[in-house]
Length: 275
Ligand code: SAM
Image (cartoon, rainbow, N blue to C red; front, side, top):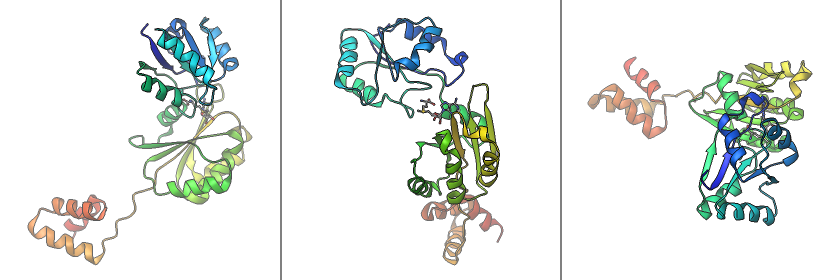
């Protein structure tokens, strides 16, 4: 096994999602750096992994980092795991991985489960562009402020949320993003009580209010991006389109005006050919 830092994903609930390569790497590493050793012990036991384990998180004391350094600089390998899913994704590890690059160690991904990607894969919302926001602020004022800043974002929005806050967050989303915005509550993914609710925000709020199970377990919230703003053809834009279309094909004229004014080319083209 090449010396270096291995960033290893573990399941987000269903142990069947542990990838074989993750088991091999955890078995053959010299040391496992875990977010919480007590939490990870049953997982390691289940897969017959008896590699020494130490606690590591981004605010660990320098002693923890020194132990990892000593191992890798002595030619060994360290596997980083978090409590569930992919380390660094709303989980510890960023500082260690940055440090690894600064020291010139090999940094090797061992991909596997991730709640955000699992939720996106079943949400039925556009996935060509998405924006992962992790956890919103716990207090409503901060949360609403962040949602306001995201209101015009056209990519699908993905959030992690604690179960006891899911209802108040959905209410804030409804108030700030509008009741008609399509959203999804993806809960307990890969586990026995997995559910995926998909509805406009106003309806989602009522459904979660009426089902206390929806405020238990682990939850990913996804919200459809803002619709591209309707393109208003002002007299100035119309004049520019007309002038350009005298010397250029409509598609090209529409493209130039769209680029210059930050408008949708399709709407401008349709305006030109329907005159
Ligand atoms: N690193 C993890 C990953 O790769 O998904 C995420 C860690 S973050 C501390 C924990 C949050 O992820 C939970 O509060 C929840 O929002 C989400 N999550 C984790 N497991 C989940 C599951 N099985 N179903 C739905 N959401 C989950």
